[in-house]
Each structure stands twice: as C-alpha cells, then as structure tokens.
Image 1 (cartoon, rainbow, N blue to C red):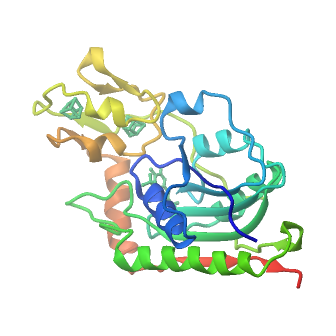
Image 2: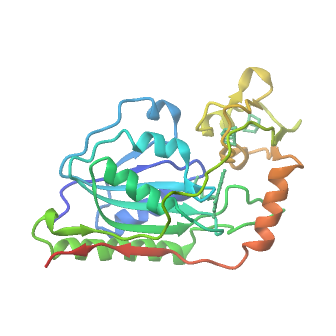
Image 3: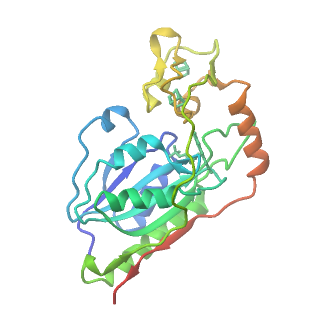
Length: 271
Ligand SMILES: Cc1cc2nc3c(=O)[nH]c(=O)nc-3n(C[C@H](O)[C@H](O)[C@H](O)COP(=O)(O)O)c2cc1C
Ligand code: SF4
Ligand code: SF4
C-alpha cells in the first residue's frame, strides 16, 4: 500500500506536538502533507473535515494525563470513514497516563483504523528559566525517533495489500480514564510594566482568553493554562505569579528531571 494522501491534525499551543508530527510525516516520506492545525479557536469553530482513503496523523498534548480537552472535543467531530490513523501524544516528561489510549479510542470512535501510536516528550508548558522541565525537547534525538517511527510505519504499509489487513494497535492506558483537569478558574499570570501592547500573546492564545482592551490581562474563566502566551511574549512581560501553578512548576522541575524517552507502538497486520 502506498500513501496517497497524508493529513496532519493537531492541537499544539506551544508547538511541540506540531514539530513531532511534522518529523513523523518526513519519516513517512511526505514532505508536504495537508496540515490542519486546530490550535486557533477560529479553526476549531469550522465544520470538521471528512477524511476518505487518507492516512491521518493525529496529535495532541497531554494535560493531566488525558488528551487536552479542546483537542478531544474537536477530534470527536471529525470523520475517518475507514481512513488510517496514527495517534501521537506529547507530554512534558512527567507521565502520559491514559492520554494515548484516550486519543486512540477517540480516533476509532470517529471511524479511523488506528495503525500506530506514539508518546513523545516536549518541553513542559510550565517550564521556564527558573524551573526548567524537559527544556528544548523535542531535541535532536527525539526528532530522530520521530523520523524512524514514520519510516517504520511506511515500511509496514508497503508490505500491506489492503487496509482491512490492519488489526489495530495496542497502546498503554486504563479505561475508565483517570480524572482530567479540574474545571475552575484561577489567576496565574501577571502582566508587568514591560508590556508594550504588541498583541503577540493574543495571537498565540488558543482560547481567546486575553483581554486586549484591559491591559492584556487574562480572562481566567477561559484560560486552559497552556502557557502559549507566556512563551510567545517577546518582552517577558507575561509571568507566572507565585501560587499553585508556580509551585507545580517547581515540583515538576525537581521530580521529573530524569529524562524519559519516546515510546512507539505498531499495529498488528493480517499476513
Ligand atoms: C494544563 C496542563 C497540564 C499538563 N499535564 C501534563 C501531564 O499530565 N503530564 C506531562 O508529562 N505533561 C503535562 N503537561 C505538559 C504538556 O503535555 C507538554 O508541555 C506538551 O509538550 C505541550 O504540547 P504543545 O507544545 O504541543 O502545546 C501539561 C501542560 C499543561 C498546560
Ligand atoms: S506579548 Fe507581551 S508585550 Fe506583547 S501585548 Fe502580550 S504581554 Fe504585552
Ligand atoms: S491566556 Fe491562558 S489559554 Fe491563553 S495562551 Fe495564556 S495560558 Fe494559554
């Protein structure tokens, strides 16, 4: 089987998921796949596509051991129509827990046949110069793993006559899933006087949660703590304030310092 059309669908506020998926695509021998980046809210508000006879690489970050909610909600509305999917979660070197299983199940329920899955590591959203957590990942070694994963999938497909011969992939995780992020707003970002009103944070926010008319303050009820605005701010004017999130970042930097490696899973085929 040859890949006729490869599509990438991902949610990636701080870009690590997108980077990993694009490298897997290169390993699959596809330099210019169709990319549906669902990070922006206006994209998620459009009608989701129907895929037919495609291979679709689906990616989302892990939030509290689960697929990030905004990604999950959107992905439940796309239609696979029997297309093949590769599911990938990217996590910040703590654990991915039930996220990969959840993403696989979402893809199956949306009508995909899932032929492979992977969990890769990206710099933690809460990581900064004070408390670094998996800084600069995915790094060269991660990207090589991503490329090789793509190559392995490509050779698996080459040996296949028909998509019906794919029996699906087993990935780790438990069902019922663990509880995800608790709902509830709290304020965790300060905007300092270094802010020059450039608006870059607003463009980076996946939740329209920044109030331009009010000193670029965060609208806490909408915020998902993704930290895209903090990482995007060229003036370092958006900072995590002292409190539970900062404490969590400190805890993660102390307790999740040991490097984790990407894990990949290939499906079984009927020979
Ligand atoms: C609210 C929230 C919860 C997170 N929960 C986890 C987690 O349970 N385990 C983990 O290892 N990383 C966790 N992370 C880190 C992200 O999974 C990681 O930084 C990922 O690379 C972000 O993907 P992106 O760059 O595509 O946005 C969390 C990040 C956020 C914002
Ligand atoms: S990106 Fe930074 S400097 Fe620009 S508006 Fe936002 S907070 Fe202000
Ligand atoms: S305001 Fe909240 S949701 Fe928007 S980018 Fe910042 S952390 Fe993410």
